Length: 367
Image (cartoon, rainbow, N blue to C red; front, side):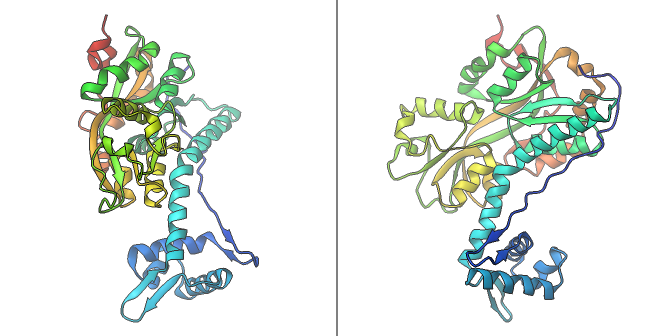
């Protein structure tokens, strides 16, 4: 039970993904060099990249020579007056780092939140954290960071929409994040959650509206234009995990087109986040995936919008009286948060923080 008084969320646990590449000869490509290559890709200059990563040019040059010796191949193409360009091998190292971050960051954030909570218990902290189980999304990431920066205790676990609402129904969390498409698919998706809703005791906190669509390589070389193309034998698809709202949306879209999941090459290949799906497509391992627009743009992919959806937190009505939840809602309504969300392609925070009954959000579920 959430205590009705304010505390701070200290100490805080932060995580950072670091990896290294070791050659057969025992030589290493340190993570510092991978960060440097990422900056070179962004700026086209080793000197500028060294400044951005707080490294001297001499040290940066030494790291580059060490890595090239270990791998036996060049990592940069450098031409006087024309800056620096990554070789195909260097591009693959930068891609590998982005894919690892896309897949692992939500897991690391969830683990850090769990450890924070245990440390707080050990220190006999005065405030019990808000227990938030939520489908992963970029707005949830920003909200969690905003709350942590304000000293609001939060115990965040990323899980599928179905698992999140089931957890709230079972009393395992205070807030459950899930998303529902607008329009023709709202009713079947809302009904898929209905067993976990209590129309009298539950309410909804509107977080954002966002767009979902097909993510394809820049220029759309596969000539993919709609869901019907997923049945083509020449296309490779990457899916989200069972129980996710995005996978449920996909199944409804396929069913509307009369396409069986067995016809989609790669239907069983699943990733846990939108960013991981985008990274998978950007790597060339799949031709198309379904996800939110922000993920596509961050990986320089083209985006074909298919569906607008609302993202909510489900809560017990009494939960709204917790000071920490009141602070969360205030953050959602703040100009600062809405400005942050406005920078996410495909996201709209105009109604963030609005409180609705389940029947107001989904009239089709009303008795």
